[in-house]
Amino acid sequence: MKLACLMVTAYILFCARFATRPCKYFQLNARFFDRRAGIFSKIGIDALIPPEWRLAQFVDDGARAVQRYPVFVKPEWSQNARGVCRADNADALRRIRRSVGDARVNYLIQEAALETSEYEIFFIRAPHDPRRYAVLTVTEVRNDAEANPVNSIYNPNTRYVEITDWFSAEQRRQLWRMMRRIGDFAISRVSVRANSAEDLLRGRLHVIEVNLFLPMPINLLDARRSTMAVFALAVTYMRHLALATKHRPGDPETKPVFIKSMLYNRRSPLLNRVRARL
Image (cartoon, rainbow, N blue to C red; front, side, top):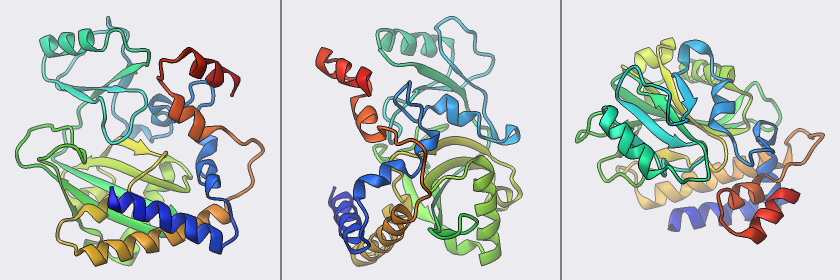
């Protein structure tokens, strides 16, 4: 929580310094926002992923058969793996389907990636040249206690180890070019599975998640890093983000990304009327 508050505060202060409004942050990836659904739809973003990196995924209607287990059942929109469950067999899937049966949101079923390692690639695009990045980090997600885990900041068995320094400058540019194949995002964190860092560079991977709303630079959670080092990096990232916000390309349409996302799945008649008007 302290880190999040620091990042928000630093971002607002840098926006004031660069004479831009912080609320413009929510327009950075707005062209990928599904206004009708009111979310960055996982199904919509899934269609952007190159076929060779894409995992089979579909909206669960409760009837479609699953061919191979395990699978992950996830809400069509969520943050930090909230609501994601793993089903190891048909009985487990039936239990999960019963537990989410009255949900007002779509749930998806995604096949499990067979690769052995998980990586988080976080980036902020350079403000003046979309062909370059201002920030790019690679973090290995480690979990020695579970098979096929739902890794997240809420899983006590999940650890984050930054490995950006494993890659040369040219290899980082190669990773950046790979990320741009998915989408020309201003800021994102892409979760992938690969058998090794070498396979990651070769493109032998599967994408398990693309976070476009509030992507946390997960490398800041590397426990080896001192508090002061974490704070210094967080401030640096927020400076780059404020610059990206100031110099974002003009869009023909401003979308209510923040409001619709915050109202998503709220069960209030008043909020439903507000949502419908946006």
